[in-house]
Image 1 (cartoon, rainbow, N blue to C red):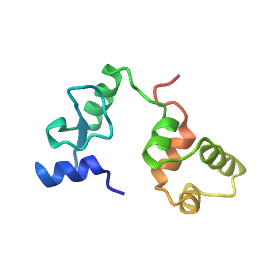
Image 2 (cartoon, helix red, strand yellow):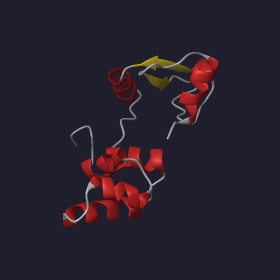
Image 3 (cartoon, rainbow, N blue to C red):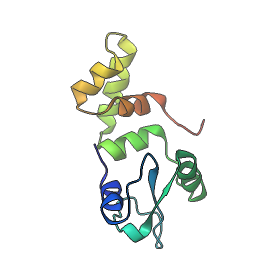
Image 4 (cartoon, rainbow, N blue to C red):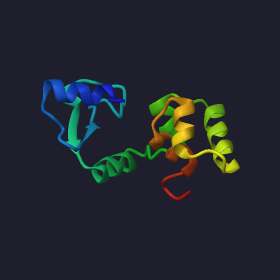
Length: 114
């Protein structure tokens, strides 16, 4: 899955070539913004620092729900399936039609150690 802001940046500015496309909207952190003038390239570390400085460092569960539109019930089901030990992350991702990364994020809980 390619996110809309990444497509916008690639079309109007340049190929991100392995870097992340970061949001820097003048009116605040609008993660749905696709205006190429409000986007810039950076590393994962840059993106994490942006999020921390904006006070919006989200839990892995929140990221998974926002990025892949999982409900609270979906995240709970993913965790329950994993705990049974009968399903691999790959199998779970196939059942929910999501990327394996999303399963990982759902299982990790909070990324900032809280």
